Length: 192
Image (cartoon, rainbow, N blue to C red; front, side, top):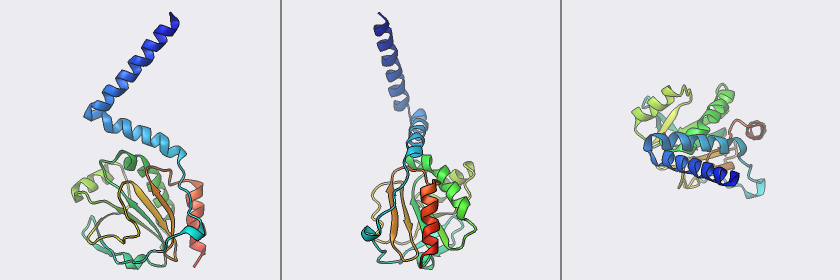
């Protein structure tokens, strides 16, 4: 008898979760919550030195929300963190707080460049960053990004060292303010 009640309770919980996922207003918050939980355990891994790709080009022009252009060539010789994302993407939303913390950690270091890149409408991006108190600059591509990035899904984040090597290439939500990522960036700042 107790097993039957327990089974009915699990079935009811399962039905409620499915119903909440089907309702558009509750789907995204639930997906963000789940992705935040996953991101707590996912630490981006560093690519072995022998397996790293070197950027073949820095030929890329972007613009920020103030319509100021940014030439990617100016990032050459610096440590670069690039995050491709969107405001409608639950894994992107889930990892943003850790990216903001990482940005805050390095924002005063001129040798670290952060590029948060989205192809969404400028007003939507501005509203999203203000609503969430994010202080990082958001960019839109004016030209095609370098082929080495080959972004087919978001979020996709790259960390590139001073020599132009892709040190981290991570798809999906992750904890970017982890000791591993900070140690990796600090290590790359020492190399040139």
